[in-house]
Structures are given as C-alpha cells and as structure tokens.
Image 1 (cartoon, rainbow, N blue to C red):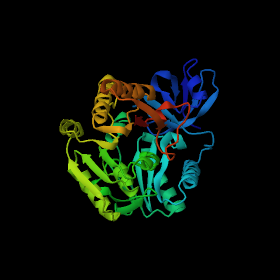
Image 2 (tube, rainbow, N blue to C red):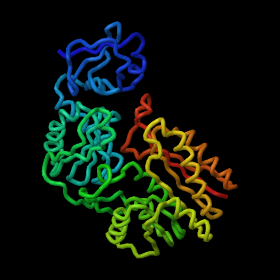
Image 3 (cartoon, helix red, strand yellow):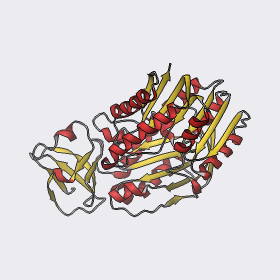
Length: 390
C-alpha cells in the first residue's frame, strides 16, 4: 500500500530500541517514488516491518516514524495522539489552560509542536509530512478542542533542515493577544511580537521550584526574556528583583506583566548585555542572594560546542562573582549538543576559578509537558541546575 524503505544490514537496531528517526545513510533502497511528506513503510534488510512514517527525500532524517497504532487513517491517528497528549497535560496541570500540548516525536506526532493558549493553538511545523497535513491537525483541534484560533509560528532553522519554506500560516481565526497563567503568574502574550511560539513553557516547572529560594531575598533574573523567573520570585515575596535583558521589547513585556500581576515590590528593569552587566556589578561590588541565568542556546550545532562550553564557564563564573555567601545560583542551558555532564563540568570549573564552595542541590530537564523518549536523546535538551554557595 505504501512505498517501502529498506534499511541496510543491522541498521534496524536503533529503531527497535525505540528511536523514531531513520537517517539517509541507513537506507539500502526505496521501493517506489515517494515524495517528501508522503507516508512510507520501513523494513529491515530481512524485510521485517519496523513501522510507518513520514518520508523526506531532501533531509538527513529520511523517515520520521509513527507509533504502532497507525492503521492507515492519518486523521484518526492524529486525533488519538493529540487527545492522548492532552490527557497527560491535564493530569499534570489540571488548573491551567496554557501548556505545551504536543511535543513532536515524544507524543508520536513527528515534527509537530502544539502550544495551547486558552482557546488559541500555535503550531510549530518541523517536518515535510506535518507541513503537508497541517490542515488535518487544524481540523482535529477545531473538532475535538473547540479551538478558536490556530496558526503557526515556525522556526527557520528546523524548517531549513527539511528544506521547507520559512513561512507561517493562519489555519483558523486570528492571531490574538492572550493572557495566560503558569500556575502562579499571569503573562500577556502578543503573538505579533513574540519569540518561538509565544512563551517558553519548558521552564515552567523550574520557575516554580526556584520560588522557594526567593522570599525576602535580593534576586537577579538575567536573560529575563518575558520575566518568568523574576516574576515568580516577585510573587514569592522577594525583597528586590533586578530584571536584565539586551532586548528592549522583551523588557517592555516584563514591565507589562509586572503591572498585570499587580506587583509593587522593589524591582529594576535594565536593558544591557548580561556579560557587561555582570562585569559592572562585580566592579562596583553589587551582589545578590539569588542569581538566575537562563541564556539562549550557545551551541546550535556540533561545530559550536567547544566555544559554547567556554561561554557557559565564563557566564557562570561571572554570575558567581556577584553571588553572596550563602547564596543560590540557578543556571540553565538549552543547548542540545551540550550534555548534562559537560554542563556540570563547565559550572564546576567556574566555581573552582571563582573559589566558590558550590553544592549541587537540584537538577531537572524541561517541564513535564516536554516528555522524553529514553531511546531518543534528541528529545532531551534543557539542563536546569541549582547550586548552593556555602
């Protein structure tokens, strides 16, 4: 029924273990002439069936596999997978109406991210198969979830890997302004002026954890973006919070969110490069009880890895230079190519160079609406660590 993709000898081992990608150099032959976005069936070299998935003749990832429940009706498959993904989120966040509804391969929806903002659903389409069938996803969201607005906020880098155009689409309704909550703090999301799909849901659980260290403390939220960490610190009754970001527009969002929540405690909004700000603080002797650093990815590919590790070491060393004793360093990396062990090593080296007595007291990945496939390290990217300086 479907074109067949035959793997080379012994190349099926990783697929059998639970990985969901077939790479182009693992394919022995393709029976038929499938086009990018078509469904194919994958077989081992001994013709043992390994599953169905989306094919892309232009990508290093040649096939993105579905799970074994696919029976041929793609819309029915999408409906079951999206509903199942939503059930998990509702069990985790029963009082929230904003979360990552679907996390691509981790929810058996290869190359598709869905973020929910009340009745607005934002897609990030990262595969040719999902691009070809995005209207089916839109129909499922409309029929099963009463979606009012559905549109995409795609990421150029990932689409370029699939040779997809850098475009966005409105599938239903408009692109409104939404007010959401992470369980503690409210945020206004203006999709006409937002990064990624509008909000970084991956740090929600970690922001909630960080709150426990902030009551009555002086807190720095560096690379604050929309202010998630600092606003949670404020809501947790921090004595003073300093928000720093190089983006004027992001700081304007923080200020709007600050007012939206009715906060009135001490705070500062500083437009500056974080490295420059930390250096200036160290020079004038300004210190903080809690330093939170959540930078953008330093390594977007393997070639940038070594430079990124030096960058993480430098950033954490500069953060430690303004951390009081005792104090708490809350630090993150969203670079997939940096492993947990390498991140620990970079922070540890920063501690040694700073002559700080650090103890790791907590480690986590992304929030639980970003599930991880154990056999697929590509589904785990965020490193979040809390250190105590004694």
